[in-house]
Image (cartoon, rainbow, N blue to C red; front, side, top):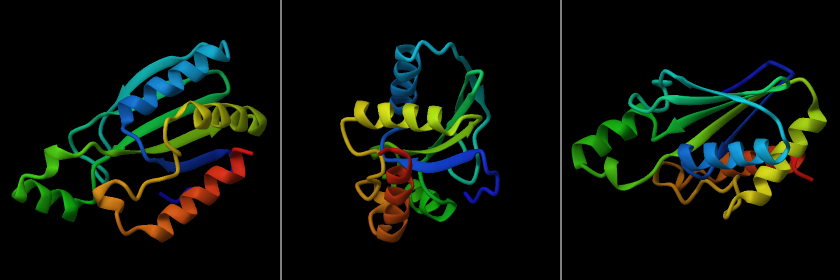
Length: 145
């Protein structure tokens, strides 16, 4: 998604939504930041069945959107029956007030991940999305020093 909001950071995470949410909760707890978890309706552009997860603190709002594929990919994977064989990736949107806090949280999240969070080409939908992965890697590298 394209965002024109200056205090909003967006990128893909190459792991599932539930795993990403657990990692972010751990990062926020370690930083002793209290947060409120909300379940939001699905974003139909990315997946029509999985709800979005929002973690809200005083200075950050982290939204994790489940991405299973674009509508065409979902249609054909539903027909073929391959849809249930792979976990989705996560589209991450963070609204922030302090860019240093954003960098701190994302750097800690990056270190907590078992894989590089910007790596998305392992997922079937993004298998040939080398340009998107390069853009994603650039976004992550700008924030995580």
